[in-house]
Image (spheres, rainbow, N blue to C red):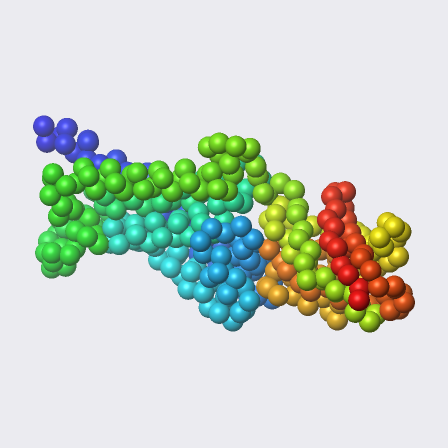
Length: 339
């Protein structure tokens, strides 16, 4: 019976889960600080820009993300703290030290991923799967703690003073001090919450339960707002809200049409590639910028465009239409009035 109980010890059986989830989070720290420097705002691949990609369709935490991407110094500080927390949580989970406390960290980090970026993923709903599985594994590790191959077990086995504290089972490992009659209800309620979050986010982000399936990471989408025709300037806000996060939208044409659908102003891809900082006022850390052959609009980037041309001053009062064309052939329009 003793051997049977060891074989079926849930704390031992989740070892593979603990190791994988531990490395998942520690590797984020490892990648950003050791393999590459992804905490430098001036380098390509800065984690703050990736965070900016979450903004357009984040669920519940969008105001927090927007505040951070509008304040680069605060964003950098939070990215550093976030990376350190991921490193500590991952390392402690790997070694099975203070497992239950760290499992709360896993749950919280995974929930942030799920709500912030669960809508991103070009093929397999990547971020949604990572987030939903993360909250599930975090909950499981809290219930089980760590078993034989862990530092928690070493501390308990050698009867260190800390393991005698009443609160140790809540932050480390061992038997949770919950009544046997209540424990199944805790498991059930927690599991239903995790399952409910999984179903809810799957539906909100992807239409995975009913209605039309959709994936906001496949095709670029630009929003045009706050458009004005004043003096010699056409100005408007451009905001990329959908599409692949690792590639920009390549704008190859910006045109202006009058009410008779006659083109009165046109910026070709070469014109757009020649724009300067005076033409683009970015709101966030992910920046709209001229590329070699077009205007590049990364996911989550928002900027005020200011296009100056003498033709604009001579346009008659009336309604005009702005048309922005992507290299894929997709285009977006917005009506602007000249007084």
